[in-house]
Amino acid sequence: MELTGKFELSNCKNKTKYEIKHKNIPIKLNEDLDEAIKYLLWYVPNINSEQARREDLLTNREYDDYIFVELMEAMKLRDIDVLFTDEIPDHIVKDFKDGICLNDQKMVMTLADGETKTMSLLRHIRNAIAHGNFNVVENLLIGFDIKKLAEDKIEYRSIFKINPKGLVIALRRILFDLSNEEFISEAFRRSGYKVEPFQEEYQRSHLFDLFAKKNDRLFAIEIKNYKSTDKISDDIIHNLIKDFMGLGESFIPILIINSSYLTERSKEKLLKADVIILDIKNIKKMHKGRDMVAEILRDNLVFQR
Image (cartoon, rainbow, N blue to C red; front, side, top):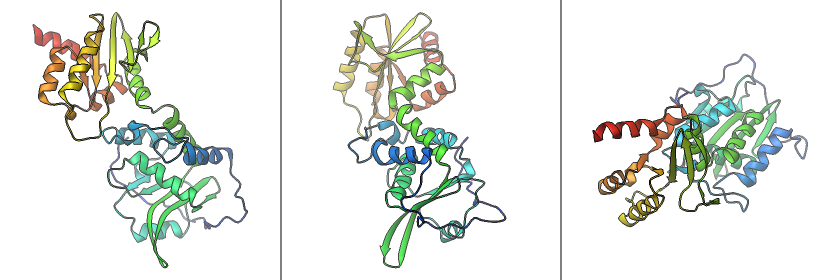
């Protein structure tokens, strides 16, 4: 599935009328929605909560579409169910206000500057729930993330109609499966590698992130995430190569990084030290089972002949 922007409004003969105001207080929540709300309010990565952890993968725009599509599939959202827009048109707001169709799901969202689609989805649903601007209509969670500009004027920043069960599945993926290391580990596993935290003398090494093995080859994997547009300094590259070389010839070093953060000089130094450089394009291909490490090693052998 790909994001094409071909959003379609719901289409049914008889829309179900609803109110955002809860008739019974407190609102009764099924197990899925109760779990989802707890995740959203306290545990989602990168939010302002003492219980939340930092997770750069979810804020990395290089991975954004790939991660978001994974969540769409978990929620059983189709391409025509999701719209990202600079502002939500009045006719879309009216369509949701007039009633909802119960046979599909929809997500309409605005993006903040520099925000990933994944963090936008989480922020909007969390805001709507935290401010009580939601209700449950049969098996669907309907909500609005709004900003009051004046007493009689409202800016709609998101409108959603989603199944709580799919939301819980997506939140579990975020909390337990989509850490940076796990995401990359899974890419290597799908390409036939055995992957685990890097072991050094039976203790977890702080030098590298992951250890991988395939056939008779061993790999030391370092993952570098940078948000700055600045190039990585020569000192960092020098120290990284020094650490890789300290492993001896039994390990093949791998650096996973957005290559735009490397200067040409740094790339040359890494390649001269036989460090394999992988970026997001390579990781995406490995998630589909293509062994990019083996291909690079093979190409290097051909080039050296």
